Length: 222
Ligand code: AMP
Image (cartoon, rainbow, N blue to C red; front, top):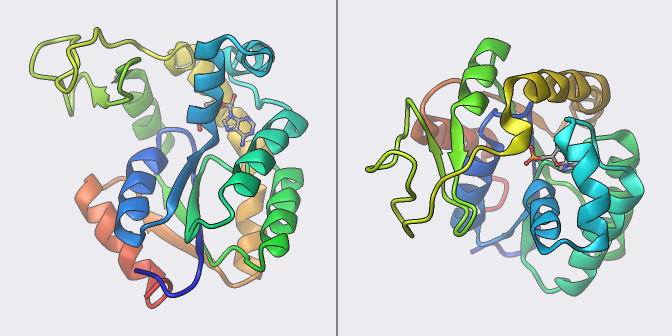
């Protein structure tokens, strides 16, 4: 249990393992896992107005406009004021999003405590993402080579047929990496200047990455 709110950012390119590690951090520190990618995919699946608008951007590997994502995040943070903190997975992705998060946290007398950066080389990212398969029903994630389900193409947990996300196809992944470099990577410098950036090698196995993330956090959250 943390004695005060803990707000942790997970930064890194698509495929770096932010989702996997964010779930572990959320469980270990009892904080809320916020994945704007998952929230947007839910809106797309529901066919809401936001989902319909977001889908076009997502399918071509672009960022969904700051105003749309910002509205979604604001609503969530306002409705979860009592949370002991959050781990942000895939947010912020632009300097405008970073500014909004600071403002929202300031309203709650909180701030970003640590920004964890998962570093993974591009060729590894491409192999990870294009082999990724996910369960549209329960959200479980597999990899055709490194983490296959027991029966090919079927979710171990709930038996649903696995799918490849439209934006996990090679051409879109290349675009997502470009967008990451242009809009999101510059945020690293900002957190480094604030002295709260911690870099961890994300190319090792998930258990080892988690161990190193905890070490990198040091006494934060204890
Ligand atoms: P992710 O699952 O985090 O890789 O996100 C999948 C896609 O959702 C991204 O390629 C973007 O199109 C969109 N997305 C997720 N989070 C954001 C964000 N913070 N800002 C803008 N677009 C986002």
